[in-house]
Image (spheres, rainbow, N blue to C red):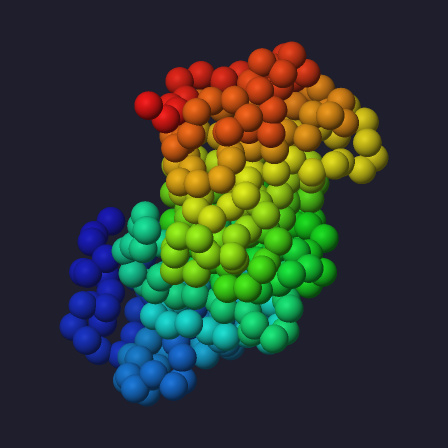
Length: 323
């Protein structure tokens, strides 16, 4: 198979991209590609003229809102949405309700720049989550802002009741920011196989020290199995992660097979284990995380020895505490 530039010259010469360029490229089929661009942008007309084509479903490839692009996707086809630069203010949550899609920014950003190029900003007066994610998907480089006092910035309902159905989700280089007093950045409620990688949870306005707009929790996990939080940064969170109270309240509904590794907690505490409710089957690995405070109740809701006594299958290894 030749290089993409040989098969799809329109992509490299500045010419308009046609559906025949993609369908006849001889490349592996991975679903349709959609683009999101604000109509208010001065270059919108040029962008639309170059990148828009009508795909095999009879739908345009360029959309002015992320919701419209998601609605154009088909479950499990492997559709991809590429977003342009800008902040999109929404008065209803964006619904990530198509299975197997990938949504990513068109810019290569990571670390503290995560989510700074394309951001979903929930209207401050609407008291809503910025997004409701109910189906398996991959989200790369998006920002989510909310002042949802009823629950999470990213959740499964406008009331903040959780993240139902969003199993097999992956967040990479995303940023979750609190512009009011959202209770949590992300609320997980009975979810499996969810991964956060190199994400930023920022409970303060622009990272300002002493801001009152802190997250109660970066992640609030009512119940989850195979939850991975890897190389993330937490700032302005009372707790980076809180384990809520499962319902029904029995050991089988504990959080299991967790992996919290390589995270940086700049202030606040790391995990509220909620083991007082005897969810003794919580299991997993807490390793190589970095804290600015001493070990013990300064990092967790209780001493490590207490947690390990309650949850014998929960391991701690190689964490770094203040000097």
